[in-house]
Length: 107
Image 1: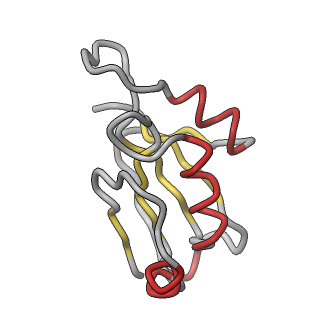
Image 2: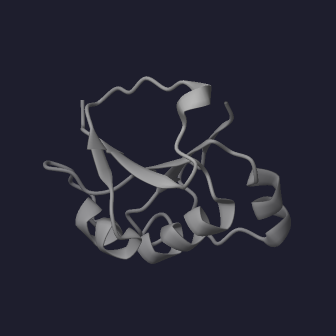
C-alpha cells in the first residue's frame, strides 16, 4: 500500500505534484483551513488524486485552541464520511474501489 501524509499543506498542488500522487492508496490530508488548505480545496485535491481512502486531519476538535474549521465544514463539502475508532487495520486486497473518506476518532 502507498500512504501519503500531506502535513500542513497550505497551497494548491501543481499538476506534476498531482501526477506524482496518483496511485496513492491512503491520503492523509489537512482540512481545517487558515494555516492549511480549506475544506473545499481538500475535497478537490482528494478528487484529483483519487485515493482508496482519504483521512482528514488538522481540523478543530473539542479543546483545540487554534482557529481552524471543524470537521463539519469538511464533511459538508465532501458529502459523506465514515467514522472509525482512533486506530484502523488495513489490508491491501480489501481497500474500497471508490474513494471513501474516513474520519478517525481522536485518541
